[in-house]
Image (tube, rainbow, N blue to C red; front, top):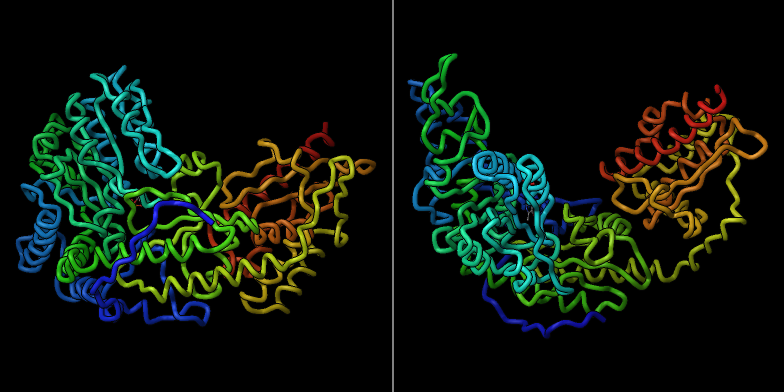
Length: 585
Ligand code: PLP
């Protein structure tokens, strides 16, 4: 059982049933089960008020903003600017001109990393991020540092997923120009001490950007009290629409920055000789903005404020404590991220029996439970814990103890089924490797056989079950062959493929593959039935995409798993290509 500080379960007065009625999607079913949505860290569901605001905009207010002299354009402009004022109040910015509408957190961070860095980041300067960041608060800074010749430095974390503030203090120096950290970690749920970080960074003259993507839906935000120089968030994680987000920046800093993009609406005057830029916030909003998105975000904020953080925040905290208690009682389950200040997110792995997050997520999905599996766009966090992925449940005000109970019951059922399975087929030693023979005279004939099976199976569940069965029977690769060179990247799980020309028949390809996820092992088995032992020329001539379409793969394999599958197929095609190349020498 996972050990971490005792949890105080409080009785909190908040009725989620009333809130649930505001979210039409929560009344729907998934695979025939009532939808249990526990992926709020990825995106939140939308209340009726937001959906209505969006419909109303298109039904009664749609026109381009800032440009028209006619009434409708003025109505649209007013609605758009009212949304800006709503955001200003929501995060307590001093001035609505400090609110820039973007596409989301990612674009907000990119705007600063591009525009601010162009003016203020020089060779030899340093930018600090933390080990807990989402890729969108790492990659833009890597790009900016590369361009400027600056150095990226990283605040490390401890085993609980808490930033090491002593190490942060050591990283700070007069060369530090920017500190960019998240307020609440999406992968582990750690609440970071951003007030302290801001104070310490300011003490050496550095700017601070806070990625508030996860925070804003959890607790009130006061950018003036925080004294953050930049604060970023996305509408869709705050019960608003996708495609809209916010960059808050202090007026003086935004004014000193060059524009991010050029185009309409961000200019005062244009001649071929010289362009004068518009004042804030327009300077950073080139082109037609997401007017409807901003209005939807305004409606979402009104909705959240109407319910009141003081009412739902303690409730969601209590729900996390309840989930933590229940999940940590499951034998063999290990919670990743046990910080003393946490919110909204619980990440875990299954150690005994080992079950890959991808398999867990797929099985939970078939019971109507939506959780996130993978690296959560935080590969450095996964590396820190020496894992590839976690399963993550993340909570919002409409989740209930019943949702947690359903998750726990489903997990126990899945774990029981995995534990009851015959022990995994033992990996052979490399010298005993046996490559599967061709299942038919050509890939086309093998494809016909497979298509027949898939057609017979019919629905998604039966096909998934078939894949899992194939996966169980697939011979594991010996550990020694699971090298970096054999690794297929782009998959949600760990996948290795090894192969070479067949001894005694150099036109044919022998290959083996393996994955830590049963379902992916099943996909490997399908590809093996298709291509193993076939002539390289026939493999290269075969239209795999058409085959995947023919068996309806897109219906039951998620896009990310499909990317992994494409990667696997590409690796096999590369191996076949090498055989053909050698043959023609
Ligand atoms: N930062 C954090 C902490 C996040 O959780 C996310 C999304 O999951 C992002 C940034 C990126 O947000 P978006 O994809 O909405 O731009």
